[in-house]
Length: 122
Image 1 (spheres, helix red, strand yellow):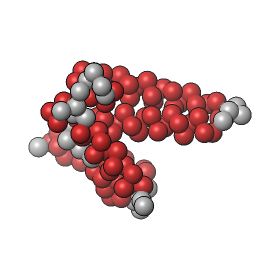
Image 2 (tube, rainbow, N blue to C red):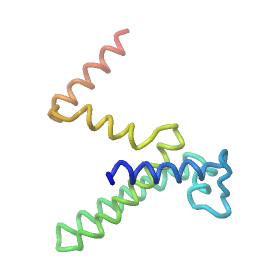
Image 3 (cartoon, rainbow, N blue to C red):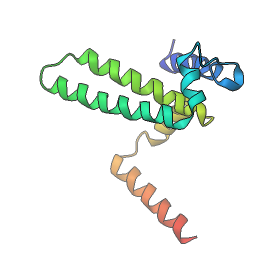
Image 4 (cartoon, helix red, strand yellow):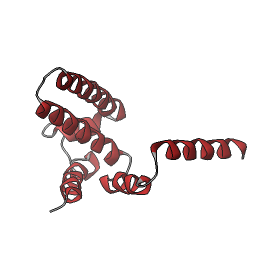
């Protein structure tokens, strides 16, 4: 079973919790976040990103690496709620990572800058 399968199963659960699909904000944390709208889940993403940074800093000073994994899992989970809200899936992210594979980070960044300049020039 692949990691993408796990992410897709989770994405399917998140999709099923959307208020439009009968998700009940009184019974489901995901439905509650989606019902409250982007400000709610985007705030959670910010909080989880901060907790991820703090956990990584703790590992740098002898902390438990499993706590970093835990925080990154929370970050990914809340990011998946955002993906679902905007009609996107984990596969979209995996496809973007695959597109970048083999490109150096510097090349990829330069390509994005060039594309942005082209769009401004149009």
